[in-house]
Image 1 (cartoon, rainbow, N blue to C red):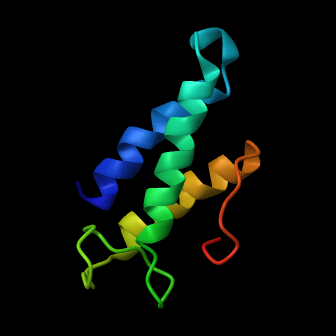
Image 2 (image 1 turned 90 degrees about the vertical axis):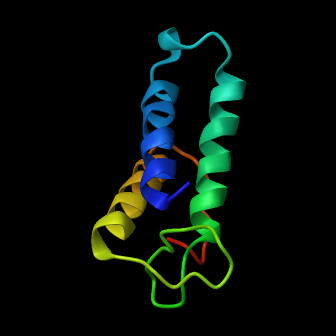
Length: 88
């Protein structure tokens, strides 16, 4: 899916991972957040923005979805998730 869908899917996982009473298996949830971080990171382009689509060579990005992706990454970093150095 597109970047917006990826972040929208990952954001609730991130919120839930901060609420331990909400989830039975925290490891599974943390794995989902880490996978989302990995997928977002793979879409970063040389200009700092994030590719809207996952296809190799895709150059379409925009400020709104890139900011949305950075918001997710910032929240993840604040919760202690590892963000690749070159991404953040």
